[in-house]
Length: 337
Image 1 (tube, rainbow, N blue to C red):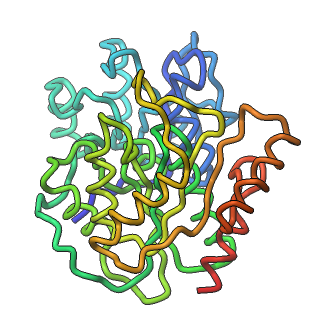
Image 2: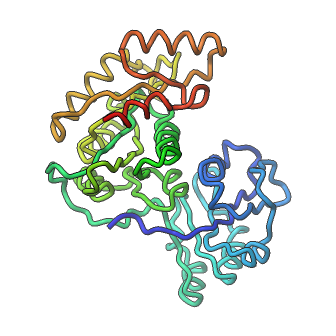
């Protein structure tokens, strides 16, 4: 059993977001799943704009919206009281509410009373809806790819989604398996592994990516880094539970220090690769590196292409920047297997 799914199309709520840093969830949903978004709802003071049709709750309900997605992250992860009537109106109009906020919608009595009366669901994405079981380490049918990182926030979700999109374009059997709140809101299902009790992370990921057809690829969204002192435990549980056949290393060019961890340098790529492969062999002895995805946003186009070429010659695997070059060469290698 994985995170409960929620229905499309979505009305994406941007609240009073001044920029896409506040509305990064909404931006991710609109970028990767535009076909699921019927429109956006913004408060008058909002400056962020997804380019979707602006709609009221009444307009969205008439257009068939099934889920009201809270697409932003207010300071502290709380829910402003002024937004409660909006969520209530959405439920009254027949929509479920999906939220990735730290505060749980199901702990707010004003909302739960309306949900009970209307029959609509309050979907707290950060609340795992899975069986808490330990991992087995047993092999299972199907192919699996996991994005891993030299650090946090280096493009693991973006890379996984880009690979999945390219596979679907080629009509390859593939499923994106979300493991964080933004990925879950994009896909409509998944498991927030950072909210799973540590003993059960591997077992939960085994459930998230079950046995499948021999040729089917599960593209598993990575989290954290084995080298980040705060999040390495989540990364290791995910690595073991995914039993990845292939890992794609994600790295931001020029980053020298672990995210928000002064005194912890980002290791060299060879160390990151070797460590992930060594630890991954516990549950999949055949694990291999399938490519490297670089975030070259700090470089010029010429510098970026030169760095991509340098890294590719060094490691002899496909190297891309998913934004600048796309991920076709990585998928070429996977398709040939």
